[in-house]
Amino acid sequence: MDAAITVENLTRRFETLTAVDDISFTVERGELFALLGPNGAGKTTIINMLITLLPLTSGKAWVAGFDVSREKDAVRRHIGVVFQEPALDKDLTGRENLDFHAMMYGLSRAEREQRIAEVLELVELTERADVLVQNYSGGMKRRLEIARGLIHHPSVLFLDEPTLGLDAQTRRRIWEYIRRMNREEGVTIILTTHYMEEADYLAKRVAIIDRGRIVAMGTPSGLKDVLGGDVITLDLDGTGSSFIPLLGGIPWVKGAKEQNGEITVTVEAGERRVPELVSIAHDHGIHVNSVLLRKPSLEDVFIHFTGRSIREREVSATESRKELITRRLLR
Image (cartoon, rainbow, N blue to C red; front, side):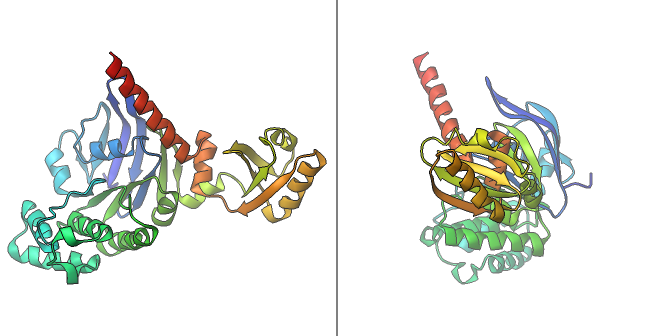
């Protein structure tokens, strides 16, 4: 197979819960591909099946040309993984962490020394290589984990929420390292994230995941083009629910939704339409408190396909898990 990753009708069930529901996609060699969705959407479950940590309930998948069910050892030899939870030995130095990992993959002493120097330079940790990891910052630990994932020249690198918990400035630096790895190492990268801007900035293509299913897939710009225009958000007095019916039949209105007490309207030529929307509201006795005009984001795409924001999905998923746990405790 020419693709780095091929997934066909992949499904994973846990008792009565379907965490991944009949998904299919491919990732080309050298591509940077993102799985975007809220916590609990099934992203990590997908990764765990592709890296052979979790058996498939049904469907098929190949990574680096190897069947994840029948050729697990071959898959593991050809991949690198940066898990969502930290997995470094804090009592070792950065160099020692890398050396131990390289030995696990059978690199000779000379190969290890050369490769450790290369990946440390890539993530700009050369000067901190001999410092104990317990003295690293959160961003430095993440960079070291990325370096470790690359140490054995993997064909495919999996990054599960690579910037989770990092501040905005550190997150941006990690993005640059990820881009550099993809460009300089030529490695195929598949990452999971619930940060819209991360998927938008990094990925060549994005698969939006919701409740275990792919609801949309394409380039970030292509997905945003689905909305067909600019986005105008209006904060109105009252609920605003009476405003949406007033927009029906207007040809330049591509869509309108009420979200978190605000009205979001997708329109053509947004700069010209703001005064018209304000005028419509005024003519019907609806007061406009504020107006925001912007280009569509992947958050808008997610809302378009699911009806709710990623944050709302995460809250809903958390409540569902609490309800499930409560039911089990009451049995």
